[in-house]
Image 1 (cartoon, rainbow, N blue to C red):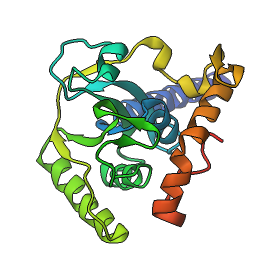
Image 2 (tube, helix red, strand yellow):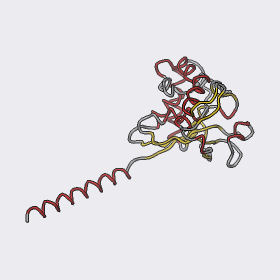
Image 3 (cartoon, helix red, strand yellow):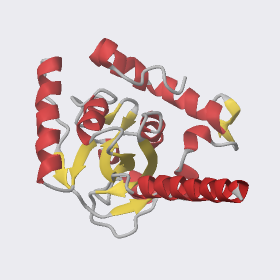
Image 4 (tube, rainbow, N blue to C red):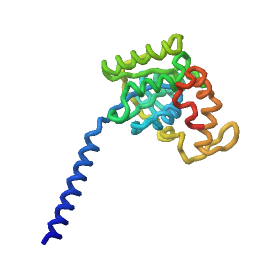
Amino acid sequence: MSKPRTHTRRLALGLTLALGLSAAAHARDIQSMVVAGGCFWCVESDFESVPGVLEAVSGYTGGHTENPTYKQVTGGNTGHYEAVKISYDADVVGYQRLIHLFFRSIDPTDAGGQFCDRGSSYRTAIFVANDEQRAIAKAELDAAQKELGKPIVTPILDAAPFTVAEDYHQDYYKGGGWTLTRRGPKSQIEAYNFYRQSCGRDARVSQLWGADAPFVHHGK
């Protein structure tokens, strides 16, 4: 009779553990933030490498055109930024840490775009959803400005409707397709790496932030 009771106990224990793990998973504090850092492929690539970040989605925000397309946004007439919505587990990484990393992944002194990408759609910005995010973003901006010793032009703006970009932009940096570049046909991953290097993103960020630049080797 002891064997059936032992088996029952094990089943009960297994069920309890399973329910406990499920509850723990559902109890995670999942939050999101929206930033614009120039090319959204690069922002995706950078932040999906951060422990605690669950997903980074490319899109458009901050403009006046409803459901804009990439062509419209880069044409400069919609007022939108290329932006990324970052979902993260706040029990693993906090908003303050992510904003700290964001400033050091861009050139926040450039008001005309980012690196080789010029124009209004490539400007930097932080879109805040509440007063807490605004206060944290402002404190990090002040700290970054003090570290650089020069004015930061990245604005802190109210959150606006976010339109998800076309499918081919999502996770472009790890895509398996092929594309034609000015250096001939390349795999999508090779094309992304070539773009990132030739655009001078890592070189400029490294020049600005030195050892504090968190992503300068990422994507190479």
